[in-house]
Length: 172
Length: 365
Image: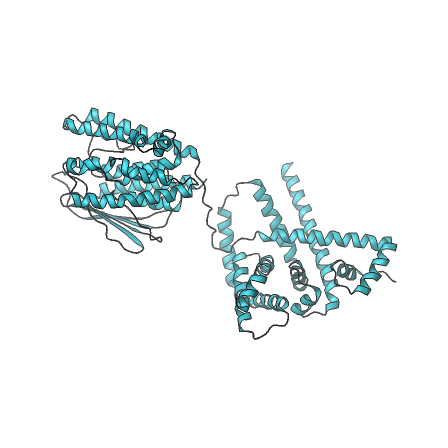
């Protein structure tokens, strides 16, 4: 097994999940993850593999997002249209879709650094790895994470509340 | 110690503090109710944010529509299909007996015999027998393909004048549908190699034999294979050839004895087990019905298992016509070409389309 194969097997799942949560698009996430491993292939040595992979993936997203913003928006619109045509058959699916939409909104509302730190932490990166990947001082990671968590939860709860109110109004 | 800030509490809960720091925070939190509240809150935030982030994992896959999962066919569908097969066979025998006064008596006999074969054959087929009687999916699949495709019968060559060469070809191909049928039944979760293996050898080629019993046998001219497309050539009457070309992404080995849609039906089968038997039966019907649209004894709407076979009409249009369309389900381009009135080709095409749509409708709930 080559080094990249080992890297892939060890980190791909976490990296794709991180990117999916970050981007809201699984295909895109997989693309970026693959590109990240391709970049790893070109490296002679990597000090902290996990921190390096997450940092590169994060940068790739940032670069690509900048570059392809317009194209992505267009495709997202198309995807939206496509989704509209799909009939959600089950209520549970609808509920889950609503939850996902609210979660997306809440996560998108976070500051970039908070969001990334939180998503990395969720993938098991320790404070030093997060600091390395995001170029933060290790001492500020705790503060970043505590802020990110609080804001995420509060914003999600607010969305939930307004959703419930909408449903109540619709029912009455 | 002064109260640790929120960041420190999160660091402590995340296990990111040094042993010394962790001990200090722990000691303080035990004594300070205010900080205990902050810690409890922080735990709540950690758990809740994890849960929220989990909701993001069912992210859509970009703009590429996800493939619809293959759905297992309700056994009821097969039961109904089997019933349709048996009833259709019986109905046809009756219809033909009534409406075929001009036909030689022995041919009516043949039809009757064939119909009874259709109903009874499974009895000779061991496992298949039970299966069709109980309308089990596996046997239906096996028999359906056989009925549609096999020309394999010892008596049919000499009796109905299928040239030996053709019959060999048919026979050879008849084995392939069995395999495909087995594949189909595997998809359906009910693999029945026995049923489908037995079927070709026991079912006397109902359709092909029937067509062959006519003065103008449906003659397989050739099936030139092409990667990415299926081409089937038939001589339905002297100088009356029909060609079906199906451009397909899957290079499946196709077995075709019908003018056209046997292949389409088979392909649909390979994609999903949801192809109803009726589609196959009608498909088979097209084989002969295509050549007997004018035969009054075959009700056009009836799923004719063995419609009266072709008669070449003296005034038949001799120009080559083509009907091209795209299959809505598979996206394959289908081209039907034949020296016959376009209306007739259209009729064939419409039937193919209808069957494919029905198959697709059953596939997607």
